[in-house]
Length: 388
View 1 (cartoon, rainbow, N blue to C red):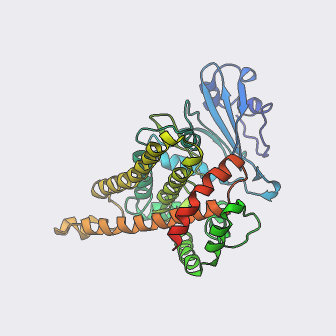
View 2: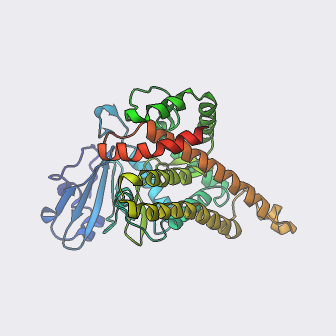
View 3: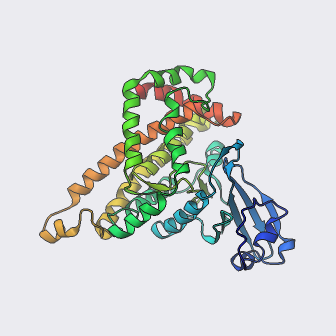
């Protein structure tokens, strides 16, 4: 099939004509493309997302728009971000098998990815609001972070392979720039697009007055921009995780870049903590304590699972140029102390990134009323304690 080089945004009416001739799509959906059931389900900020169903099954079609969807053409974004999401998905499939959705087709000129339809999975954020539990949630997220962190670094990769990959992802300029401003900078001054509820003004004001805190955040921004330790998901929050009661999958790595090993872990834990603090707005008194205790268990499992998996990979897959066995085991030395020190640094940095993400959510929260008030207000007392 000849690829159409001219980018055109998909619609429900045009999708079957545009991808119906792609064997990888048609064979999985089945039936005549004209008979496919197509639903546009994208509710995020950036992309078009469709579920396409036929006689054989369903797939997801995701297409990057050349602007921020929730704002419009006044905030342009390059469609090449879809290229990097594709690159990230296929790397995650190798580094943490079974967690990322399988990719069936990628059309670079159209910034279009056709991938596995995750069903009956739902967005984790909704599950946390509804008070639903997911078996092994913290364990799986911790393992995902450890496997992608270790296997995307020169602890495992050869130096030429890692450097080539860093060069590839360095082309993803626009999306990391959003993280650099949205997470690390904008919350700490009156940026134009900030938004918070009036009740949070004392917390926001205190964040912006605290010069010592802002200096620490900027040091972490330096580490984020300059450190290419491993390939990150880059946006690992509860809206980027889908789950059933027993299965967990990670989606939407379009913010992927090479950065610090601790970043994804810290972002995930921050979102679990915010879910913990928001629970009084969602739970009855008799349910609240038990569900909050479960969320704390998820957070503990994130750290303990990351630690255990990282140590296992340290012993079994340390084949890169970092901490080579020629310097340690092959000379009768243990490398355990070196692993301990690295994990301690990762834990501390993860907690720091966790705090920054929670600051960001207080100062710059989406304007959806049901999420805005219930989630951020609960964070305020703990943030005030943390800043002292």
